[in-house]
Amino acid sequence: MSDKIRIAIHGAAGRMGQRLIALGSVDPALQIVAALEHAGSSVLGKDAGEHAGIGKLGVPFTAELKEHVDAVIDFSTPEGAMHIVKFCAERRIPLVEATTGLSTDQREEILEAAQETAIVQSPSMSLAVNVAMKLVGEAARALKNVPSGVDVEVVERHHRFKEDAPSGTALKFGQIVADEMGQTEQRHGRHGQTGQRPRQEIGYHALRTGDNVGEHQIVFGLMGETLEVYVRGHTRDSYAYGALAAAKFVATKSAGMYTMADVLGL
Ligand SMILES: NC(=O)C1=CN([C@@H]2O[C@H](COP(=O)(O)OP(=O)(O)OC[C@H]3O[C@@H](n4cnc5c(N)ncnc54)[C@H](OP(=O)(O)O)[C@@H]3O)[C@@H](O)[C@H]2O)C=CC1
Ligand SMILES: O=C(O)C1=N[C@H](C(=O)O)C[C@H](O)C1
Image (cartoon, rainbow, N blue to C red):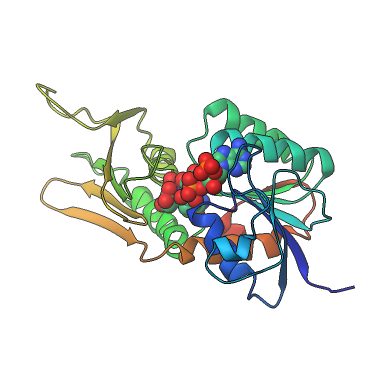
């Protein structure tokens, strides 16, 4: 019996799924044993390695997980995510949950599932983004009492295929700021006779252009100067490597909710 960590990828035919198949299959600590897709997918039965452009892997796309696995990684859709969260919670299978665009209720359900199994959840598995989250928290803490006020806006850029806006990462950056500075409102874009900017809001601006794999710019605007934290992905592999590290981390953990800061030791 191999001592490799056995993983399944959910949403395995997608943009992220393909990179996880490609990178996971050459990681000596891991074995990809299942490539999961939804029951209506046109790829069912096809080889996941061939679909990912790495040649035959011997792992066909399936709609149901039958194999024993040590962890599942989910990059799919909110509906897909809720399906696999329930599945993993019922069977106590550790889960890496990366899908964004989740509703408040769905996030609540994931928290409840973490009472049954170990879950690493983050809107970004990237090392640079998670370090940027620390920096943004630090900046918000340092600036929260500036007497003339600080305006915070989050600008994010992603590819034209992205289905949710603003990105889960942008919302997380905003949450980190609000937890420190106390803003109570979200403003999504501006148009027309908006009036002066209220203090208590965080502005979000979502650009969708070309094949951009993800950029986030957190702007702290003061009177007389501006501080910006900017983090830019060059390739989806930055998210995929983080998710594979999270799978190794979560595979041996007991039930609970974990973050990428836990995985990365930040
Ligand atoms: N946390 C992070 O670091 C990152 C998170 N993401 C998030 O991951 C998610 C996926 O992104 P991306 O790979 O670009 O998207 P894609 O649309 O390329 O991939 C999603 C895949 O999931 C499949 N799918 C759809 N519904 C279900 C279902 N019910 N069950 C199982 N699979 C399903 C899709 O199939 P079909 O095409 O047939 O619908 C597709 O193959 C998004 O929410 C994105 O925001 C992305 C990058 C990084
Ligand atoms: O859809 C994407 O591509 C990405 N989605 C995540 C998000 O919504 O924050 C993470 C990353 O920026 C790429």
